[in-house]
Amino acid sequence: MTESTAARKPRRSAGSKAAGTTGTKAAGTTGSKAGTGAKRTTRTTSTTRNAAQGSETELVQLLTPEGERVETAENSPYAEYAAYVADITPDELRGLYRDMVLTRRFDAEATALQRQGELGLWASLLGQEAAQIGSGRATREDDYVFPTYREHGVAWCRGVDPTNLLGMFRGVNNGGWDPNSNNFHLYTIVIGSQALHATGYAMGITKDGADSGVIAYFGDGASSQGDVSEAFNFAAVYNAPVVFFCQNNQWAISESNEKQTRVPLYQRAQGFGFPGVRVDGNDVLASLAVTRWALDRARRGEGPALIEAYTYRMGAHTTSDDPSRYRHDDERAAWEAKDPILRLRRFLESANHADEGFFAELEAESEALGKRVREVVRAMPDPDRFAIFENVYADGHALVDEERAQFAAYQASFADAEGV
Image (cartoon, rainbow, N blue to C red):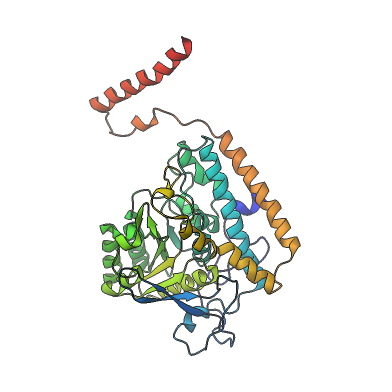
């Protein structure tokens, strides 16, 4: 079961909802409003405090940390978001839960493999599963996604085999998948540049007359890059059908939000002339609903939008980072209480949407996924140590030749030492 579902191409079309589980409708790919006339409008807003300004900031939230869906009046100005998940089914909810659990298991396995020397580096998504799965399941098959290097959950939603994500981190390839086969671009290491790539692609879609949408992912740290501001400006001026999805996980490596911005990130969109929304990034329903809304308006020709998913990076920035040097354990403990997977599980159990059999089967699938990931990675070839010197210059270069010779001598020194 793991083999078929993890590697499958997502079944999404303009007229059908996405599916998070095999054989069931997936949660979140329709791109059109669902149940706008439903009386059960399930959306609430809460507030967060901006430390720099001391102001209250609205936060779109559909599922509380305790796992409760909160009713709100149909005439609420935020009911538009809630309409996109008002008719979500138990099957779809279980699909979202499954996606988050398997994505977290894959991420944990990759982290362990790096610690065992099988990968050179890994950027964990721990704690950000809801933001990624919710937004990823909001996309249609014909939409195009431009990720950073941490969007493992979005890749899962787009049907990219998770083992394909590991080749670059093992150093055996420059990506591992064909971007056009899943409309999921290769991981981008340069901070913020993918926002420009996404905007240019979206401008091209407009010229082609297509009704697809584009979504660009970046972090709070990348929002300080000039590339992101330039992308905002071009997207606004040319009314590009692009959604900017910022995963604000509170830390740009070791720099906190307070050292990056004086206003909430989503408010930056106002200065460029398009809407911005802050969503509870640990709430998969809110992430799904708001992203559906943003992509829907983009496809209708209403231009760009900025979504700030307010979440938390539970682990290190990458496996080369030590977060204990710049943040306190009590901060992490406070966010653990808002865990996105536990939140949805509480709701599934309280609403009788899932039984112990479902959770047991999912645990078995999770174990099978972990085993497959380990086997595939360990079967990958060792990286070619000299590949780094290839294709630097079209016709070769004396300095590169010199560096290659120095590196070859360095490698040979290990063989000499072993022979002593």
